[in-house]
Figure 1 (cartoon, rainbow, N blue to C red):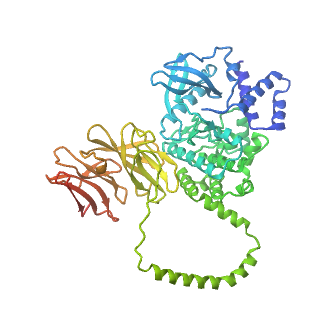
Figure 2 (tube, rainbow, N blue to C red):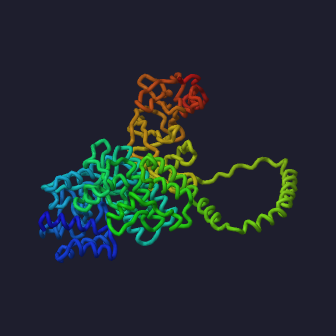
Figure 3 (tube, one colour):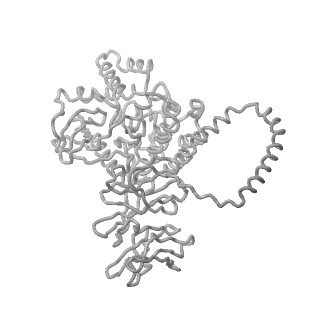
Length: 605
C-alpha cells in the first residue's frame, strides 16, 4: 500500500472509530463511494479494534502490518539487541508491541517497535521518541516504567515493563463500575498525573484505553505518545475557530492531538494546552465509569466536539442515583469548560478524591435516605411531639443511675486495634498533618527489604513510595503534608537524607549522615521545623565523639550543628520541635548506652 493510500485509510479509521451503528456505516459509504477495497480495509481495522485491548497504545490497528509491511516476515522468534521477541501483544498507530525476554536480566518486558513503513515520517519518529523520554522521566507506581529506548538496524524501539492485566475500557465493557471502584481508579490516575505535571509533562490523551488494571488492583497509566513538555512551545498555531478544528481533525489526523470524546474544550479548539486539559479528560473518564456513558456524545466527531464546546452533561445522579453529592461536585468542577473554573492543580482533585474515599459509604447512605424521605415527615413530627418528653425523662433517669454505679469505677483501659495486617515488620509510623494518612516503614510481603509506604486511615490499601535495594526508614511529614523526608541506609554507617512527594515520584537527595547506632530501637528519627524550612537529624562529623543533632535545610541540604555530645555520650536522637519552632527536645544516650535522658535546645533560631 502506498503512503497516500495509507494516509487516507488512517484518516478514515480514526473518523469512523468515533461513530456507532448506522452513523458509522453511512460515513464509510459516503467517504469510500465506489472504492470497495478501501471500505473493506477500513472495516478490518475497525473489527480488529473492537476485539483487541490496547497494551501500550490506542487505537489498535491490528491489520496495520499486513497493509503496510508488504509481506515482511514476523519478527517473532528473532532478537532485537538482547531482547528476544516471544509474541505479538498488539499493534497501534504508533507501533507494534511484543512480549519479549530480556536475556541480560532474565525478565519479561514489552517491546514497542515503530513500524518500518513509518520510519521515513519524521513526525512519527519524534512522537515515538518523545513518548519514551517523557515516560522514562517519571517514577511512580501508577506510571508504566520505561527501561530503555534504542535503535537497531533502523528499527526504533522502546522497552517497558510488562504489565499483566486488562485496560479500563475492557473492564468497563463488562458493565458499569461501582462508585467506590471508580473513585479508587480515578485516585490512582490522578496520582500519576500529579507526578507527571510536577515534572512539567502533560499527557494529553487520558482515556480508558490508556489505563491498565493489574489483577491486584494497581492502575498503570500508559502511552505518553501525545505527551507534551510544558516548557516547549506548542507545535500548532493557536486557533479560536470551531470550524477550523473540525477541518483539521478530518483532513490531518494528529494536528488536534488526543481522542475526541475525552478532549478538553481548549484541546478541541486547537489552542495551547496546559496541565488542566488532563484534569478535564480525567473528569470525562470518571463520569463515564460511574454513569456508564460519556458526558459528551455525538453521531460524528464534529457533533462530539460541538457538545464538548457547548453542552453541559446530565447530572451523574440521572444515570447513577446513588452517586454522592460530593462526587457530583468533584466531577462537575473537573468538567468546567473554562479552565480557570476547573481544578487548578490535579493535587487538589486528588485530595478531594481521597477525602471522598473515606466518606463514600456514609455519603451514599445519607444520599439514599435523603432521596427516600418525602411527605412521611408530617406524620413523624406529630409522633415526635409525644415521644420527645418521655425519651428525655428516661435518658435523665438512666444518666443518674449510670453515674451512681460507675462513679468509683477506674477509667477504662484503651484497647489496641490493629492498624495494619501485613506480614513482617511495620515500623516508624508517622501521621500526616491532616490525620488522614500514615507513612511507615515495612519490609514487604517477602520480608526482604524495608521501604516507605503510605496507608489511608480506615483503609487496608497501601501505596509503596520507595523501591530501592537499600533500606529506607524514619519517614517524617512536612508541615504542609506535601512531602515526606526519610533516611536510606547505605554502606557501613552512612545514610542518605531524601525527600519525596507524598504522592510519589522522583526522590531528591538533601545530604548524607553518619550514624553509628544501628539497632532498630535506636533508629535516628527526623523532625521538621514548623515552618518547613529545616529538618533535625542525628549526624556525626569527622572528629566527633558521638552523633549530635544538626539542622538540614529542606531547600539546599546545608547542615547546621545544634549539639555536640560529651565524651561519655553515645548519641543525640529523636528530636521534636516546639510549636513555635524555637525549642528542640531530644533524647541523649550516655554511659555507653546504659542511660537515656531528655535534653532540649532552648534556641534553635
